[in-house]
Image 1 (cartoon, rainbow, N blue to C red):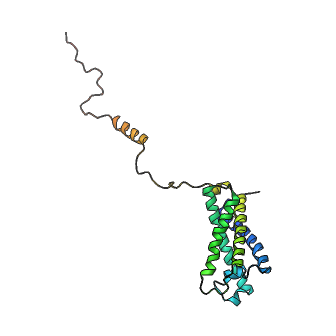
Image 2: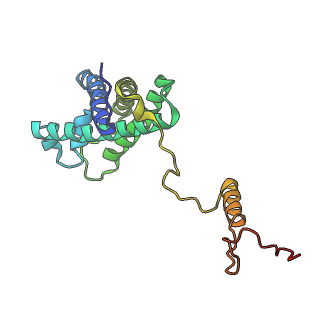
Image 3: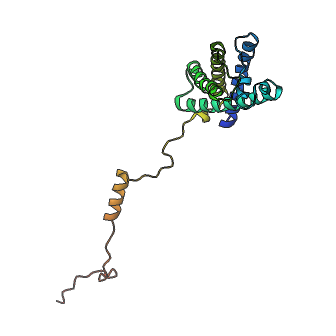
Length: 200
């Protein structure tokens, strides 16, 4: 299978795969009564009223907002794997899911006008588990679908010009100064023998 060679494309694909996993956990959690507010509702409640967040337009808005956060999270995961390698994907996926999910969960809760933010522990614990699933799926899909070249870390000082000469450059410059030949205007290079002959 062809690997994805573009970071943005990989972030979109892996982020949406992770979002699909998140929703597969979040929807049954809401249907079972564990979570009082779906992720979509909580995200839409940042921008619209409580009644509007339950409508199809509010649900669509919530999916779009969740997609954006998921793609940005995938970009972070890809960047971290390019620095730290693609090993230990389970621990890295759990860490990324909890970290990104914590930020995504805090945002709806700190908005004062959000009337649908979840206040109970069960809803927030459901979000944490959903985010772990997101982190695992995003990490694994990015590691498996991404081309190897995407995870090569570019050199930090690739564009910085050197401010000092190296020892080899110093040696070459000193040699070039010492090999310069002086030019004398009174030297006759056409003369074959400058020693005067004995007239006797």
